[in-house]
Length: 389
Ligand SMILES: Cc1cc2nc3c(=O)[nH]c(=O)nc-3n(C[C@H](O)[C@H](O)[C@H](O)COP(=O)(O)OP(=O)(O)OC[C@H]3O[C@@H](n4cnc5c(N)ncnc54)[C@H](O)[C@@H]3O)c2cc1C
Image 1 (cartoon, rainbow, N blue to C red):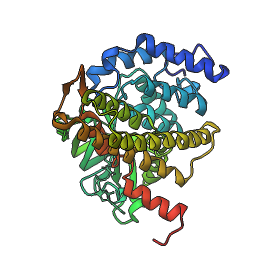
Image 2: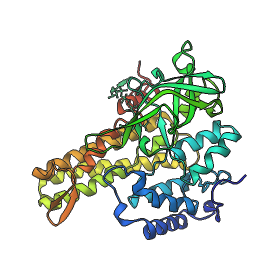
Image 3: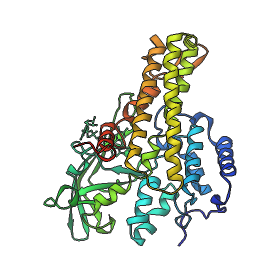
């Protein structure tokens, strides 16, 4: 069986320079200018035309192997693709299908599951969201209480998920649910796929500080999903869940967000006429140096990924550094903007219209998602520094 659009080209045969140029040309010629560097996570109706174009071109799954309809990019080429995407300010797609469930099904799924679910992910016909966190199970995910019991040929699911990014745009959700209450916490969990249109599912958007509705609560009231939607075996969900942490760990430490913050900071400083102020210059220079150092260390970790090697626990420092530097930049933007610093939306400053608060709103949650920075520090303390627990 063939999945997705057949790839016309072996991208890995190109030099890194030629590949980067091809990707850049596509993005710069076709990506809609009004969608560059969006101040918030866009909804599906706002960005789907771009991703349908990527799907039709066969570029929607750059990291998937060609046999499953991806571009089959080697790690070094994949990093170039992602960096070009970020450099051009391309919006983040609702990519749980591509980044999470696709790779999970390739590794843990059955052939029938791959045939059923991979093609509509590649065509952007089915959009996925991630149902892990619950009101009392975030950092301590293994405490989750949503439960699933097998009855006839179906699992019946009851419980609640929260902070589910873009669930209101998704057609499907993958959930971690407790299938054995007597087993040790991590051992009684299963990984299930289900349709959000199934009877008994309620999706309720949560309005965030910026007034946006990017994530949701999802409630399950006797929701049925066929037993064939179990991935990786009964009570094996923890192993499946952990496998999702791979590439995300370096991506969350990319210097692109703080670099974007520095651009906004420069624009605000120009508009306020403080670029020559020695105190401001000193603070700005410190941040610029921190971002430059982040770029160096990111390149070091990217080279490890580029060689196809596994990342060690020390990669946790990347996420801490990237997100906390971004927060300091966002704070300085607000301070520098003076009386414009508290205005939401675009503000006229000097000759420019600037979203002063956008970096702040992006930076605040960045230390929480993908494993909070406190948890990353615990990992460094225990696994890198061998400090006592
Ligand atoms: C923008 C955004 C999008 C998200 N999208 C999704 C999604 O799509 N799907 C999904 O399932 N989840 C999602 N999440 C949830 C995210 O995974 C959790 O917020 C995160 O795991 C933290 O869990 P919590 O919010 O329950 O906080 P808690 O775990 O309750 O933590 C509260 C505070 O205590 C600290 N803390 C907790 N345990 C320890 C410890 N052992 N040592 C030191 N400090 C500790 C934490 O660092 C934090 O500061 C999203 C979160 C955000 C912010």
